[in-house]
Image (tube, rainbow, N blue to C red; front, side):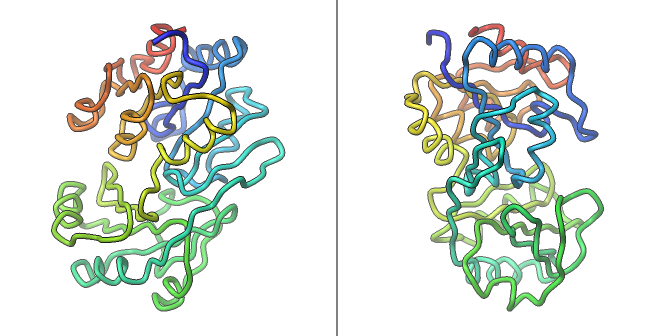
Length: 259
């Protein structure tokens, strides 16, 4: 791979830790790449309102982002939604709740927050929150559904999702018992493909860095997919290379290797 024209970066545990800290070396590496004319695209499971503050911290003042695991793309500044892919969540949500009846459910309200069936643990979802009945939550197409069971583990949710056979949608399991539902075919890769086409960039000219199960499609799609050092083995297995952990400035290492 020659020097990439576009760098796609996951946010949580790739750029920032749980306390929203960014390592100074990573900030400088991202700024250098951007100054060199490389398109920097944040590609994340976060909703769009959880991204804009980070753009300011990285001195990224114009460009594209992929949000909500690829269901939403937007440009900035000012923020303008360029795509929002929706699906009918009713069958999948009710199927999961038959197995985990006490789970928390949230559906995304793009650009604002989430409608939920109960209050989520503090800090787990950003933006405004409205509590509504389950029937109301699944009554219309949405971009994204989050199902969360604080009493379960990520391994239990991985097993559950596999057993349930959630047809007609795409799903991602996080580091905790957190199940993200999206339309079939939607992933960070699908969102990035839209952005790359808009910018005239082909996948071979993309460097992608991430650490989560929701990064697998992105790492496979990019010409150079790099897994963070703390990524699960199944994520490392699809990557072209493995960089350092977050606390080892993994993103800065990955950028230095290819820029």
